Length: 117
Image: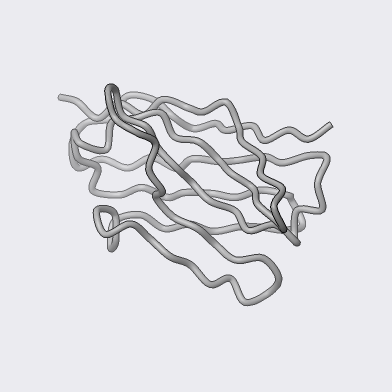
């Protein structure tokens, strides 16, 4: 049974930081491209960042988070991370972890991030 479990969300003030974690089980983690997506209230789910499989660890980011967010992974722990700095109110959303490989696509249930003073 495949599971992706996100953690680390919460309430943070503008300008603050949070680190999201995604723990995977039931997949050969190292062979999956891992991604973080988010969905704000009333909006469609959008891609935030991805990191490639294998050892190259090629990353990509949405323009809205470039320079503020960093995606990473530790294959030995079957985990992916999203370090979020300089958070803005518009970053408020449910953040979802995604694992993808060759047409297979798995999602976590999400963790809520609220940026507010």
